[in-house]
Image (cartoon, rainbow, N blue to C red; front, side):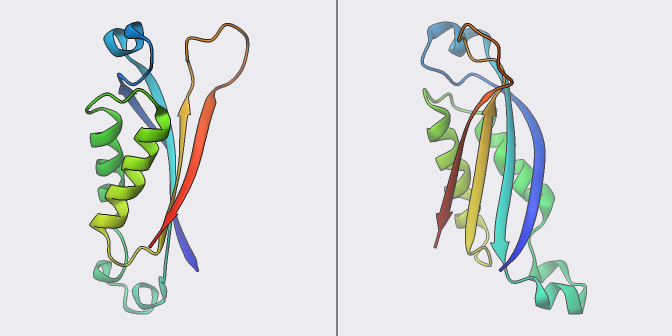
Length: 119
C-alpha cells in the first residue's frame, strides 16, 4: 500500500490529567501516515485521487488545539477517526503524538503514543 506522510506538525494544546496542563497548556507534536492507493493520482496528476496534505494538517490542528482531553491517547484516537471519516480513499491511518514537556521529573526528549486504525 502507498503512503502519505505529514511529519513534524507542532501544536499548542491544553490536554493532560493535571489541572496546570489544562490551564497553562503545552506543546504537542504529531506525525501522521495514511495508507491509500496513489497509482491513479500518480498517472493522472489529479488531486481528486489522493488526499490534500493541508486538510490532514487542518484536522490535526483542530483536534490538538481544540477541546481538551486528559490523555494523548484520546487525542490520537480522535485524529485518526476524523481522518478516516474525512477521506474515503484512506485505508489506514497511523498517528504518533508526542508530548515534549509532560510534568514528569527527569531528562528525556518526549513521551509519545502511536496508534494505527484501519477501515
